[in-house]
Length: 100
Image (cartoon, rainbow, N blue to C red; front, side):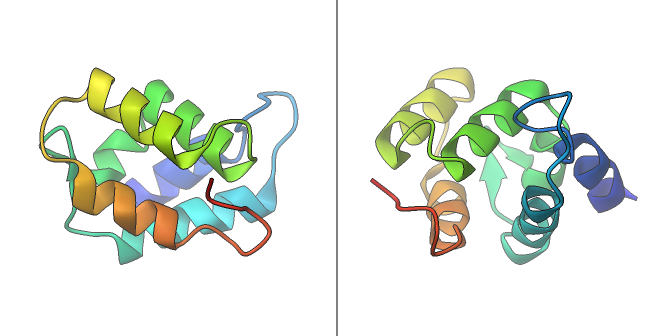
């Protein structure tokens, strides 16, 4: 159920009026493949239900922010050792998304 909820929410990112099935599928894969990594000591499936993480991740996916901005923002909102989770997410960006 956690993945389904995250995907349902993710479908609206980054523009709430325009669902994106590709982002939706990618977010679901990230949640599954990056388990058990955490952001701010909480599992990714929980974090992907939160607007801040979903928004930042969709902005990264769509090239609106770069990897350093993404990492800095996540680390600001969710202090802790987030490196493994961030690296896992970034490593799964599609080839069309250029990690800067």
